Image: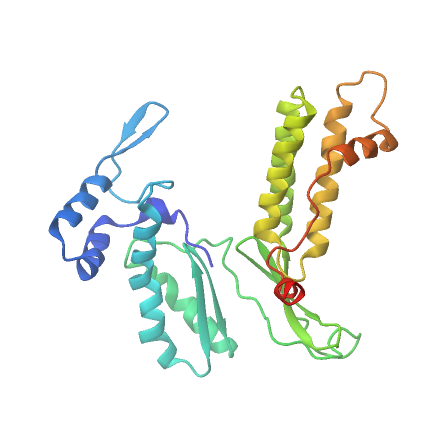
Length: 283
């Protein structure tokens, strides 16, 4: 699930009410109130919105989490879960969240009630980013033709695609890989940077590209995502070669020549930084 324009639609009245439950210091409350009413400067024009918390503001993430704590988290634990047939859980990061249910009927019931709950506080569910996904543990013969078993779906959350697969021992497990949209967005950003900075010395290009790759691996480098990390590095290498070739009028840079350049300026290897195997290997 995703909330449409969450940071722009936070109701200041309800936010002050929630702040009053947690904060007793009147000076701090007045300071937050002044910050909310200070206005936003965009393209040389100052606006004073009556709702919302500016994205990028240092206090916005904290206020947004406080707001959704009472609107969603506390309501889900106290009001929703006791009324369900089976088990349920909620995982939320800012305005993106996932709900899991053991019974489809419970999921449909909450999906029907949740927009009404959010409407009370001026929020709207994003229709394109909200969907019901069957995610049951797959049967061993589910993928065989004529088996009648339901193949579990997939969903994207926090930049990862979550899906069912089998471990090396044949046990069904949930794995994550880099979402296709995030992979394309990252490669597009690298291509744009190479296009604008291909005039820089190779040392400078190599330093910045290495930083970008290490930053990508630091977030997406988890257990089971090695293939997507290797693909990202390979495609980033091809992009760098392509834009370096634009400086030559006769032909593209041959791979043999470019490989010699990579030996002098090697790009970081696609190592899963957050792999569960790394602590065991280093101990």
